[in-house]
Length: 179
Image (cartoon, helix red, strand yellow):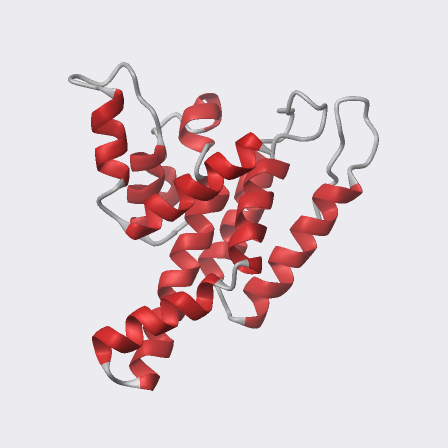
């Protein structure tokens, strides 16, 4: 397990608590992408710190934990059941959707903030770590790339609004940043 040290070199029990909680939840539902993303986010954000001195990774841990506390799984299941009209199919689709959402929330800042560790601009998520391609897609959408041709802030938010996964991740991200 990764040791989460703050800027002073002290162990961050808060990070450990979130890490263990997310790991337990992901293990219970067999969310393999989330389990990979949990360790990957820890590795990629290692050595980065929040203004508070806490390890930066506490931010993606907190937003992922918020999604779990909000019982997002139930909302996703209800949505899938209304579309698929079959509980077994809805359950299977819910586990996939939840896995992709939580993995994306864990990695949402990595392409922007961990460029030196992702020289292929995040395609490593698919090629090296074998994550679901939608995780790369959603993390890319959530990444502000002001150097991209035609980039506008309005366009950035318009892209986010196209997928419920990116929209909910950005909303929880903003709520966490304001707290």
